[in-house]
Length: 298
Ligand code: CP
Ligand code: NVA
Image (cartoon, rainbow, N blue to C red; front, side):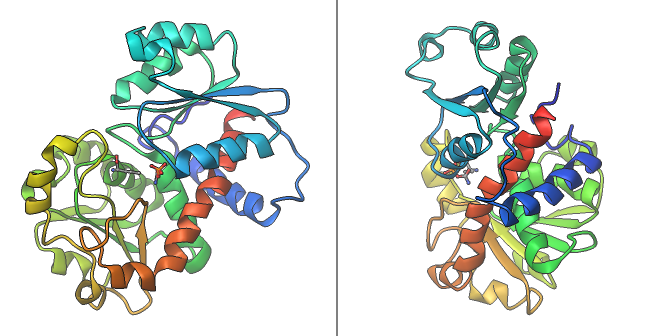
C-alpha cells in the first residue's frame, strides 16, 4: 500500500513518475477516460483552512472517478477529542483513501498506520509534499529539468514548505539555498537527514545571486498567529522584491505557494509580474495530485 506522508520517504523514482504523469494528466484533461478511483470514496479530513488543496483534491478525485467526502475536523468527533487512531480505524473500514491536513506530522503517520488505507499528507506543520511536487512540475514544464539548478527559498525557512523542498533537493539533484534569520532556519538535524547541496544564510542577497528560481511562503503559517508581531519584525528584510529579483538569473522564475501577503514576503510589483507562473503553479496542484492519487492506487 502506498502513502504520501513526506518527501523524505518518497523515492526519486516515484517522484519522477509522478512528475511525468502530471504532464500527461494536464495535457489530457477532459479527454482521459481512465478512472483509477472508480467506485471509491476518499475522506478529506481538514483541521486547517484551505482553498487550493481542498478544491484541487475534490475536483481531482471526482475526475478520476471517485467521490470525495470533505470532513472539517471540527464537524467530526475528532474535533471533540476522539483519537486519530480510532478515527482512522473507523474510516479505514468505510473509505478507500484519505487526504489529511493537520498540525502534527505524527497524526498523518498514525492515520496511515491505523487506517490501513492510502493516506496523503495535505500539509502538516512539518511538510507540504503535494505542494513541492507541484512546484517542481511547474518549474520543469517551463524550464526543463530542475537537476543542477539553484532554488532560493526566502523567508520562514523553518516551516513545512521549505522542509519539503529540503527533502526533494538531494533526490532530484538541485542546489537549495535558504535565506532566513537565524531563528527561522531549518534544524541542523533535518539538514543532516536530507543530505544534498543545501545552504542556510542570513544574507538574502548572496542567496539570490544567480538563482534559477526564487521562492517564498507566508511569514505566519497556520497555527502561528500568536507569533505574528514577532515574525513580521524578524522576517522584515526577507522579501522577494524587484531589487532581489535583479540578482537572480535574467530568466529566473518567481514562485509562491499561496496565499500571498503583498509587501510582506513578496512585493506587489514582483507578484503581479510573475502572476502567470504563480497561478499556473496553483492550477498544477490539480494535475500533480491526480498523478499522485493514480500512483497511490496503482
Ligand atoms: N498552497 C496551499 O496549500 O494553499 P491552500 O492553503 O489554499 O490549500
Ligand atoms: N506555510 C504555510 C503554507 C500554506 C499553504 C502554512 O502552513 O500556513
